[in-house]
Length: 270
Image (cartoon, rainbow, N blue to C red; front, side, top):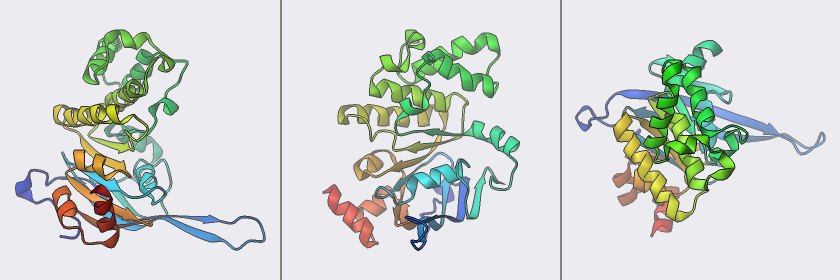
């Protein structure tokens, strides 16, 4: 099965996200007299993400992993291809409909502090998506903020702090809390632990795993680190030079890699 399909008996048969023939190319030139160079960041890729799974997307820096996440969330414009979420082609819908759909599609960034307003208290940062998506009535927002903080392992009093008062791991917990505030079905985790100390990485990975179980989340987990991918993912898609060269269960790819680039990744793991 070329897409690493999960069959009905495996408990993750419902397709939540389907990507078909997706491409994003960039045209660059050093100066007006130089010839144009085409960078194929994403080059005609196809894959599916099944409800309740964590699909890992691994590859070296610059291979197009982050671009895929941007295209799925429509933070970047595709050149060709189809992206279907909950049966809707998100490339074909209007922006006002996409805003509604983003309630169910969220992202955890590599460095959450870069997307968090340093002037706002943590409670304000978490209250914003609650109000935007009308998750709870206004008089219940403070209680919901406390619930989110508890979910990610922070204290209720942390709502009064600002990001500069938090450690790297705590900032990432705030980023995760904000991502799950809208009660999404699908979360893209874009290198969520790569900027953290090794001692903190495991804590954040375990948090993501527990939230997946508790909240019924589905993840697309983007990383360049096979050890991280191995720890959290059910299936792995290997990306190389803008293409997905291999996809299958985590155990299958680690024990029996077929593509030369995948074999190299496995050698680096040893």
